[in-house]
Image 1 (cartoon, rainbow, N blue to C red):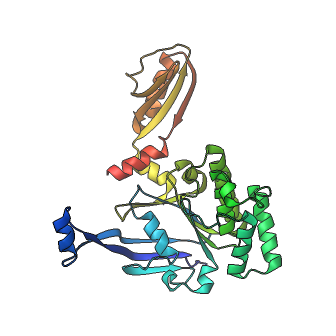
Image 2: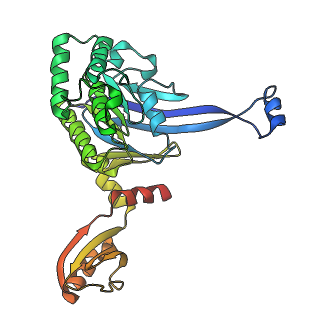
Image 3: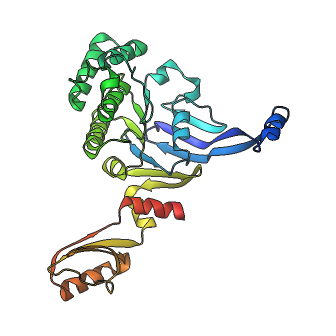
Length: 324
C-alpha cells in the first residue's frame, strides 16, 4: 500500500527583491527618489518528495538555497510560486496542528534563553506546546538520558560550551516529539566526539519514532552516517536526487587504492595518480575500469603489507557534482 509523502515540493521558487545603488553621496541621494532593485532567485523551480521515516541529506555549497528551502518548509518564509506540503499542511499558513508536528534546528541560531537554566527553557517549551505534564516529563527524561544532559539542566545557557549548548538545543527542539525534523547544520562547530554523539542521537530518534529528517550539513560524516538518499542543489537548482551510492557511481569515475609497503619512498606513479605518499603508505587514484588490473600489478610487483580499495571521499564526489 502506497504511503503519502511527508514532504512534497512541486516547482518551488523563492525570489528576493534586493535594493542596489552605486557608491557615493550622489548615488545615495538619488536612491531616495529613484530606487533600483534586482531580483535574486534563491530557489529555482525545485521538485522532490520525502517519504515517512526517510533521512535525506540536503546538500549544496553556501548560497545554494538550502536554508531558504528549509525556512519555506517550516513556514518561516512564503514561497514566490510553486506548491509545498508538509504532513498535508501548507507550511506558511502556520496552523497550530502543523507547528506541533515539526521542528527546525539551526546550528547558528539559539532558541534557549541565555540567562536562565536549561531546565527552565525546557519548561518554557512545555508551556508553549501545552504538553501534558506526564508526557513532557517522560520525553524530557528520555532525551536527558540519550544525550547525557542531567548535569546541564541547572546551568544557565551562557555557561555551556558550544557542544553542550547544541545538545540542549536539539533536546529542546524535540520535547514535543515532532514527526518531521528540519536540521540545518546541527553539528556545526562541534568537535568530532560531539558530532558523533549528535549523529547517533538523530539516528536513534528516527528509528524510535519513525521521524522524517531533512538534514543539511557541511560535514560529510553526518551525511554518510545518517542518509541513504541525498538531494543536491546549486544556485537554487536541483542537480541530483537519489541514493548516496548512486551519486558516487555517477560522478566519480575513479577508485582510491591505499597500499602499505615493506619499503619506503617507492615511486608508484606508473600505477596511477599518486595522491599522498607518507613513509611506506601511498594513496593512488585509478580509473574504476583499471582497478582490478592495477591491484594485481601492485601485489605481483611490490612487497605489499596491506592494500585497501575504496570509493573516493564523498567530499570529492560532491565537488565533482558542483563542477559539472
